[in-house]
Image 1 (tube, one colour):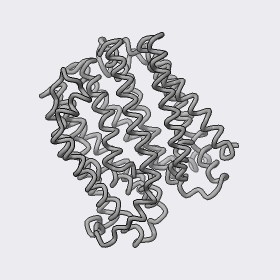
Image 2: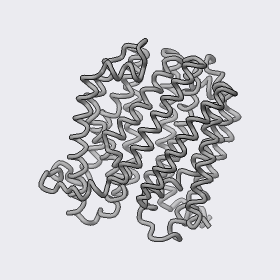
Image 3: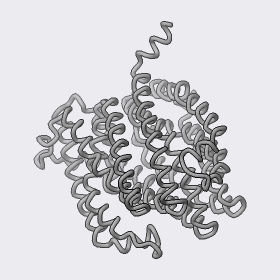
Image 4: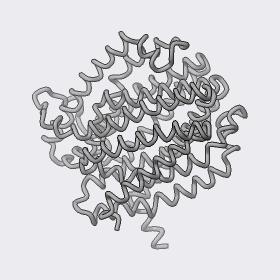
Length: 424
């Protein structure tokens, strides 16, 4: 009983419990929104939603300059140094506001170009990009404010932002999908992040006087220079990664049809639900821990805390998910999506490899191992793209998830070798 009591009293348990509530809510909301998409949008519409999501991932990284992980690290290190903290906050948010406004101009005035590149010439959704141009600055600042809360160690507030944000996303999606079907689904994706800004700002303002902190007089280019490695890592991962996924999806559409692309996007959507648990725990709890680890022994302790407590629970959950896959597909979507069941095995195998490597990969951000990260990321994306072409030609749509599993396995092996001194 004392052992159980000690576990319950740990920070990791408390954060994990609240995070589980957040993820449970997210999944519950996903049950509703996915059902709406399945009924009113169908596989082809979900494929378009997937393309927009990939584009937004790249755009978010560019508009935030990939600073999120760098913000977490430097805020965590300087949270007791008020003057340095003011410099970090002011420098980051002045820079991001300027970048976001410039990008908004490109989105608004070249909406036709972006529509043809993301959706193709058969679809006319230029207005989506004009709305995106208006929401982008709010979204960029919101993402960075959340990173600031992470760096300050306010785990619970970060998770509460996610909970409230998910609720807002549900209400917006319900209204827009019911009213506008596919067009509404696309609008919901770009409007929700902008609305979350107000939630994030409220929680940040309770910690620091944010508006009083933003002063041009404390802007420091040295801080920008120190964040550049994080920027390069995030941009390579998010931007190039999203481009590769766009290319793979377009290859699927061209060779297997848009419905098959929709089935893959459906599998990816299901995967994203349970991966939220891991990604949030890593960002909120483990990244700050890795950032302040002083030696291999401390880093090793963080790694094995993840492997002993988080990874086994994740694997057990995936086993249950696999056996309930057809029930889940009909619950989340419709019978039209039952072919997605054939993608589960390799998707789940790949996700286990991915989760095992994620904690190791975060060490690149924690210790600013920029060059190695970029080389390995380019290596991984190259394997993913060319292996997907090979496996798709031999196994059809299953080839995509086989390629992902293969890529994640190779990446895990390489990371285990590179960080072997912190593992054994």
